[in-house]
Length: 466
Image 1 (cartoon, helix red, strand yellow):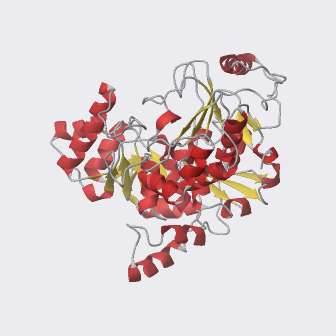
Image 2 (cartoon, helix red, strand yellow; image 1 turned 90 degrees about the vertical axis):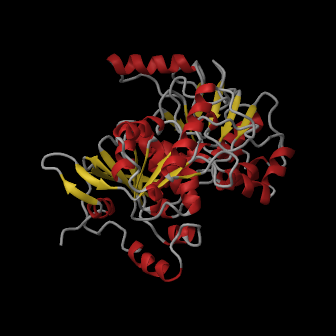
Image 3 (spheres, helix red, strand yellow; image 1 turned 30 degrees about the horizontal axis):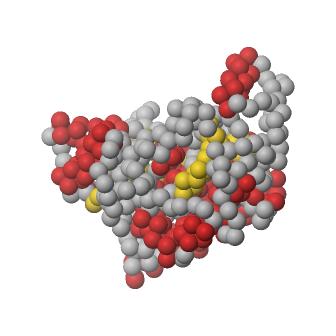
């Protein structure tokens, strides 16, 4: 029998039909939707006189456009309010479960799915959002789709997709003090570039990966898309099973035992062949910070910004343009540079583990007066947990305040925008020009590096303050 990768096993089991010389028709187990990419898809169904084929397979929540203070009030931005209202209306019409603002199930779409146990090993999962790759942490094939494809899944529970190539990224060894899953992700992207994963699905392997918590694995898989990959995944193991067990939609009793036995088979065969392989040493990774305008422009926090030596033509021009936008120069040291804003949250780092790490770091310290900090839980469940554990009290004592769940300052689609020219150390996933607001300058980092920066007011190495 031919040796198969984990990706092959799940993909092949979901192929409904192969189009000769074309894409596969792939069955989708779980479809997540939010307010931004679904309205046009629902309109398409209406125009064609179609109903949602399997509404129970779709889960909805508004996240991109929602305010993170005073959520009980009406949304002031007209477009945002309309999109949020349309999501509720469309879900009601089609019998789709909708976790609206203020409800216990509300949150960022890629955070509530795993919390509820809807995301499970061996599944195919899609959403009209590029960071759907987050769910690959469970040993699932999860990827973002466009609006026309959202309509396709709503109408048929299937999608047409060419089968991607396979890549394995192995990280062996132990992570150093103060190094997190976010640093692993930024390190990988800095090594393979933002186009290194193009056309591939990545499987992450090695001891440094298996030692990560589920939250850490979700952060890593979330950022797969930033290397150009279709998605990322990690083979499920005891850490995965322990996380899923007992959650609201997880299999129960006898079904759990049967399902668990199947999940344990979900791993790449020993002789499975990948199209591309990379291996890195965990000891080489330090807390990372980006200095440019794409997630691949990242360095260890103690290192200087690379020079243009060896660069030529458009590469050099683009590089210098990026530094100019950021107000930095080649050879600059990032450590010690002043920062105006710190953002903790998003589908990358808005989980309870991220808030525990941030709070443990700032406990007994004080927020720098020059820094505006936005701490935004990824879901109502995370917010409740923060309060149950007394994390909110630690944060308030250190001069921070907690906001309400939403995508917030990850992207400039709601009220939480970084002002023009200001510097933001952000735990989110993208640092493109204007991503956090027109003219905003974004530096991607881990919750620990963000915490260190928030208390010093300048880019700091968390290891020096731990």
